[in-house]
Length: 192
Image 1 (cartoon, rainbow, N blue to C red):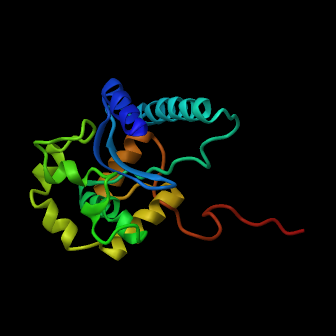
Image 2: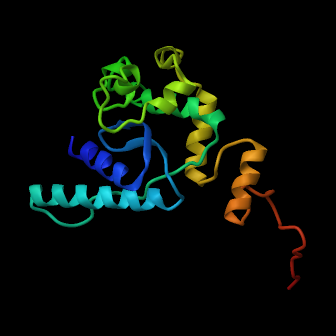
Image 3: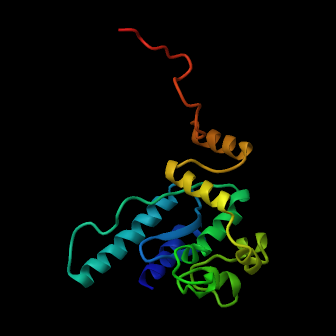
């Protein structure tokens, strides 16, 4: 609960919208909409530093708390539905529960009952796009899109249409799409 409270507090402070989340025993999945590009790094850093400090103080220990870095995938609207299903169904996929709704540590409860809220999830943008969230989750996971999401996170490449990727590249001032495999064009090998 402390982790969720810190997420909510820091999200409000940073202006980050949390559209979906699930806390797992050894990791967390979040679908976030930041107000500007660097907001996620600052937000996650603050949450994780404060949470680690609290746990270290409670357990009277020191040293590394978080393992590895967090993965992040920038995606277009076309991939949002797959990401929402992926997040909500994570506890089912991990065989922790039979149904996603049975997992306590998930935004699915707030999305199914927005009037109750959870103090963290911004439900309106999700529900305006997916008014039948229960039906979407019941339909199950799209394995192909889930693999695509996991791969994009691993290689840290955005997901989207050609127009979406072109817009991101223009904003970033660099190529974000993977290039062709093999020797680079215009570069020749030197003979010994």
